[in-house]
Length: 144
Ligand code: HEC
Image 1 (cartoon, rainbow, N blue to C red):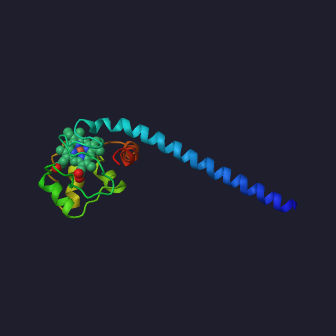
Image 2 (cartoon, protein in one colour; image 1 turned 60 degrees about the horizontal axis):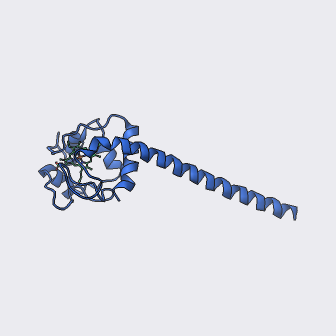
């Protein structure tokens, strides 16, 4: 009997622990996304999260979709070429594209197998990896 009780307690404690670590992870995620919202200020002049196209295409539905596929937006040739070559926006490709090193134009160029892509996006990229990661966390839910 004693043994069963011990096991029951162990299970309960385990469940409580995993629940609280789940909550902690959620809280950490929310904090990252909040920071990401600030980073998005750099993009706001040209991009909406959902809805209308501005100077740049709207980022609505961005995660998991093919590059250069927003309706009603006139992409540059190189951007269209990257979309046709199968560029999909996800954590990995966005971290590459948005990074100041090498910078969006060079990164896209590399993807296309040339030195520098000609894109209409005149943005030189983000310096800190942490800012990029937070921004992507934000975009993941804000563009849904
Ligand atoms: C000065 C305006 C400007 C700024 C600032 C800017 N962009 Fe862009 N962005 C563009 C333009 C224009 C394009 C379309 C490029 C083309 O067709 O060559 C684009 C394209 C993109 C695409 C590809 C979208 C698609 O449909 O395939 C992503 C993703 C993107 N930008 C993300 C960002 C993020 C995130 C930021 C902020 C960190 C940002 N951009 C800042 C103008 C901008």
